[in-house]
Length: 190
Image (cartoon, rainbow, N blue to C red; front, side, top):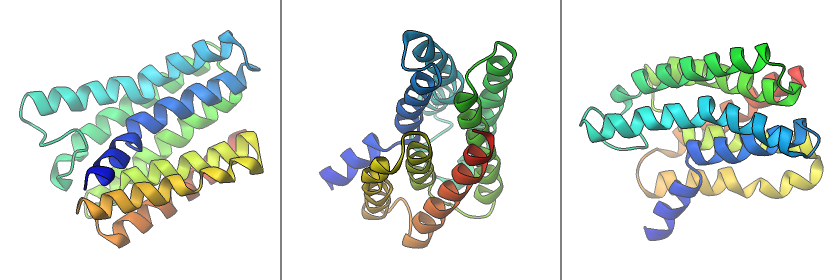
């Protein structure tokens, strides 16, 4: 159980989105500090603000945990995250952010729309959706050697099932949806 909890924390959407956004920002800025600055700005809106909202909800007792494990509690944090990412995308676009970063945030916005919609009826795994989407983006951005990251969504899914946070179908659907959304949106916009 300890290993599953550790994997769940390391593959949490806020962690993966932060790392991925910084990498894509760096790449979009041709490997320099300029790109990292773009990545940091995108991270604030795509990960930082939404996660702060969730932590605040946990502290006020409106949310049971920082993974928002209760399906009925997911709608508001997901909508808040969607609004934050959309505002971030608009600011990035207005200030001329690199195209790969705009494509990544757009994929995140679309992914959140899907997550909000599905979560209304069913508890799809957002951990595996983000992990699978991250692998797709890494491969599309940096090439086939990043297929080495394929175990990440598998481990994320294992941890969610092991912790009884999700069923196997919820994990499989999450990973499939996340990979498809990332591939379609990021692939089309880069």
